[in-house]
Length: 163
Image (cartoon, rainbow, N blue to C red):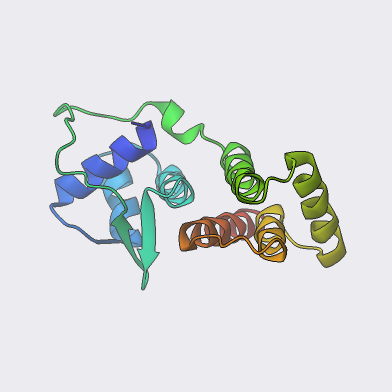
């Protein structure tokens, strides 16, 4: 289990809730538990969304996994490594997963898919993940909602950090 997933489990457990607002999540990770600064607590939230451990519904956060049975020490505190899962790594992972999905279902070499994604990205001036999803569509590959949600979260996360 990743550090991010474990941290999310602890936050929701300590709050005793199935759903938290983004404010509650950030406040809990920074002020209540004193794990992170509010800025880093936001990074943990973003990492949880990007990794697919959290989903956002009407501005609220829900874990996408059952955290009730997870064994966590009472004095648990995430290591600084929890935030080292950088945006680049995560977006590369998502991109690779989309490419692998297309490659598997269509028996097309990954190089060919990557090349088409790069062309589409350049032509349309969009981020790599949406370009990959469009290429999947071109191939007639049905990508599930989780990919779309993660890609959306990636792109929006980038805009808020660089905007």
